[in-house]
Amino acid sequence: MSDEKPAPVTSERPDAPFHTSGTDHVTVWGSNEEDTLAFYRDLLGMPLVLRQPNLDDPSQTHLFFDTGDGRILTVFVSDERASARGQRVNTGAVHHLCFSVEPDEYEEIMAALEDAGKGYNVFDRGIFHSIYTQDNNGLVIELSADKYEIPDDRKGEVLATAQRLREEDGADFAQDRHMEGALEELGLPVNKHDLPDADAGVGM
Image (cartoon, rainbow, N blue to C red; front, top):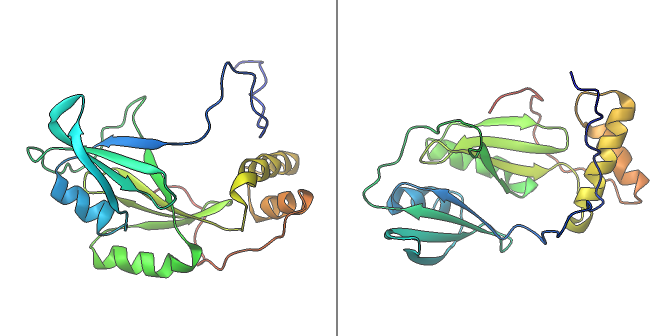
């Protein structure tokens, strides 16, 4: 066991040669265009905003989807590839993708997944509420709704404060009381969304 203290959790920017300004896009290896559109456009409701060749490999097509806030998901597809049944798990691999959804659409989302024949699990993760399903290639997709109203530009600050309160409390993970305490400490209103009851268990 190392005697070194764990890295501090803080919303302050680290001493680094430069700082990123946000997430521009995420790119995944896809299968074919038909199956990819059926999941990301037709089920998750992401507009297809650009289609062009993969500039590194013109035999593939590069699809660009708007995830809902102007951030982009892109997928490399080829009609030569069938959808896979699962993902290979290895160091450096993508574990899952998470997209935000509106809390008041939660019931409709679960119904839509059922209608599409997609299995899913629902968990209360303490700081947010999550539905887990899989895309057409077995990649885990998380659909996450914040449990509390948090301004986008204050989210890191709220989470870092909840982390401090969690540690002081000796809790294993951040829970409602830590989130509410963080919001109150930072002078933000405590407005909790009405989300269905769910286990705080493990799994996807």
